Image 1 (cartoon, rainbow, N blue to C red):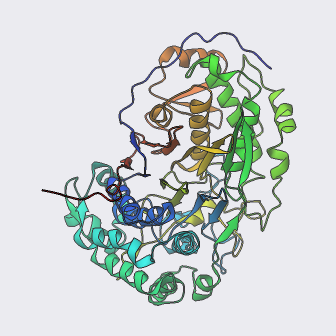
Image 2 (cartoon, rainbow, N blue to C red):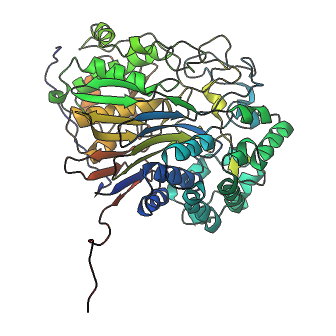
Length: 558
């Protein structure tokens, strides 16, 4: 085992939120009203899948900048019998899409996806075929217990009656006001009198409520072969978008086997390609397993240096492991092999930062959402969903309230590459809905938004829990690192002496107020209780359920 010198200083930090603990269920999402919607399903007798789907529909109302039924995502489901299933509801390129459909402006690192008029970011040509609604409905039909109409009720009520805008949502609207103003529907909804809705205002979405009612009636057919789909495709045809009825009819949710790795006696289970997380979290943990990370101390220069080098190695390899496996051969077995990790680990210099052969990067939005849910029977859902950029393509389908995704941004607009556009090709993603087990029993489940920074942040939380012995709340709130293009980003909570020590090793340091988004997680305690935690980076809220019905035979007497 490699050793490193003692750490000069370890970071301490104060958690801003508090966890919740319950015995009969836990719902953690990035908005309190979505957590309430999920917990409502558990309280009426539903399972974790029912709760997760209800929470996701509610999030489309209260976090419209992050998630929508015209988006896509990945759900990792573990059933009470121990089965793990990954449902891939990621978006696909339209059948009319071509590898050269955009006019590329640059091939520099970080600018590979810049195209003329931002056509892959804003407007109809940025929209990929939606998979979110299909994925949620399939999860409910296969693994849930409640009817679709029932799990939709909280979201419908929130859209019809409205909800109070949080400062987070208000800031997101203000930050994207210019793009939102281009769309008449979004401008009228979110920019009254030309100004971003203020925190404390009530947002009511009657058109979207009607669309959700239609889905409650017709199921996913409402979009994939019904009136909502007709509205979408007619808008695309009129505005230069590429999605047609044949795209909607052809869309299919993929059921995938998870990637499994091991780390210090724990089993690490995550999604496979086109998601990066399962492969590269396993790869990075394999590299780190050769070091005694715990005694180095969280936040020490030594620990951060090793994390950064492992992260750079993973991203150097990532270019061959993130594309749709139906189009590109992905060497999963090689990348998660411990012998391969040993080869890569041997190249790490303990006293010096290195440049590793760079993979393609810079292609994902940080604007996503995540839910983590568990019920008292042992069913667990960890699901990451998005419309990609903030408010997606900043385009609303008239009369429906539906916001479009801008998932075409995730493709490389240059032809002839692993991530280039091809008709029907599924987007790649860094989503990391992870589940960790110890001795075959659930230990914790977690995930977060944050684009390319998602799976490195999930990795750091796993290391925090296993190596540094953190509480769940500490693990999700702990300061994070990220490295790209030769720059090592450090959140501001890391003290300056640590940054100086890293500079001395050759790291170019950039201080950041936030890296990636609001993580939420559940820990499965030895006494059978569940602890839920959400971090300060979003409006995350854990809702725990305890108590229960009266004792059998109990009677009220006067």
